[in-house]
Image (cartoon, rainbow over all chains, first blue to last red; front, side):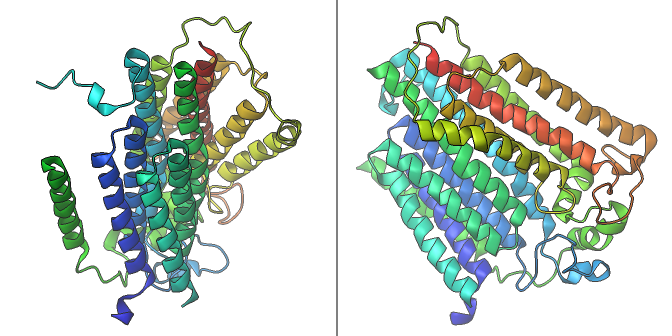
Length: 124
Length: 81
Length: 232
């Protein structure tokens, strides 16, 4: 049990629980802004999971400065690909959050309510 | 060893803040808590040897995204009253 | 009650799926095949000291183009939705901004913008790059919007800057097809001495355009929301 307690397992567990908390908020909350907060938490959790999969124990960041021997780099650095993916995903996450919030604003201007139960146009 | 203790500490704080962000009735508190989750996540990225990701998360997750939430909340409150 | 049961069921199913997917995860001990290639040949093929930059700009440059396009679309839709109908700002009430915040922001905003530019110019040497630098630029501008509400920035200028940098980014990519081996190939300029500012071929130039594009897009989102505040 104690040998499982390393950095990548801890961060993986934290990421998974944050994903589940975000999903819980998404499903239980009635306020539109709280739903968007649930989406943001879901996003953060997925990013933590992806970065912790790329981590390799005892290795350093993928930057070839004076601390890293260039010829032997593949034995010293962690995986750069998940980091590159997450880097762009965070920026896009902000764009998506802003888009959802502008939808919320537009919906509020039409109906003067943030309660999800008041929007039943598509329910039959 | 120090890294593992720090990671557990950060993880517990993040989970508490995430539950606050989902459960608190006050939307302002929820927005601040969601921003703080991102802030602690950026420290966790630094432990995971990802300084690029940590920089992005600190600038965007806890800075810009919180501001955008508050702009929308402010607009909604102003239309209300 | 049935609804709560359903929610619990969905959460439990999701937990089983995710935990099941990662149950056997023991942590990597070595790089995968592709990552191994990037780590051992990144310095000689691309000449960038920061391997994340090498992956984002050159090895997977086409993905970056797609992501920048998504960001552009979301900024455009936010601008479209929050269009200000009456631009009559004469009798708007400005909130009182404290003297300390105002004065501090006048000192801090140029420094933050300078730091953002530093981050995206040095993207191939140190942690940082176009996306981070653009976000820092945008947060500097957002600080200015909050602390100095009387100051107006032309939204048109931001849009023009964004368009110019986007078009230049794509043109540099096409130049890679014509003069080198593929889209966004950075060897159209000489690779230079590894680890210096003028190295890694076209990566600093590409990252300057990406940084300006991301910065102006995020600023444009914040600006649309700010202009919308003033409307009744």
